Length: 275
View (cartoon, rainbow, N blue to C red):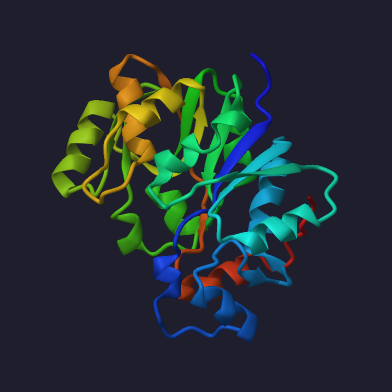
């Protein structure tokens, strides 16, 4: 297999939860970033959160990063265009409107070309080992994070985890994606997998082939009115495309709201940025 070197970072979101007023101990610089929903550029230890995200991706062996941003995100573009880097090459793809994660991935089609590529959220910091395992997988794949691992090693509370999408797995193959799962849906997925440790949780950490772009064009809006990458993946699975599920008991840091800033900042204390 050709080594995977490319990653698409979805950094276009509106940051609605981050903009929402909430009691949080933020510095003036952090409060300014929160006011405009600039999660990627949230200063933590003197560096934007996205610097930490990109460092972990570089640690995993990825060298070409495409940041999907909006036309208004000139600060992101200016920052990375003027930042000296030795391990990463950073380019940009513009998503004209925030139409969802599938639309964000589609914006990076020229960047991906004919190569397989990783896709991650710009407001999540993923563990290096799970990304390394992902890019070693054949074909298309995704990381499935265990609930226990996320509870033990991330800043995400149990009630938020309970609302995350689930991966239906048989053996090592993805067979279903369930969003907003009910207890009955969880039980059904455990039965189908034949393992009480399942189902695993999707944190939007994907290894995709170029066939995803056609799937992104084929799907319609979800119930939320957005074009969702999970629906594009579901369409490929229905077509017979096999997705390997790479299990992980590690944690993922989540910077979605003002209340997350302190915990993420503490978790990254001493984390060295190396781009």
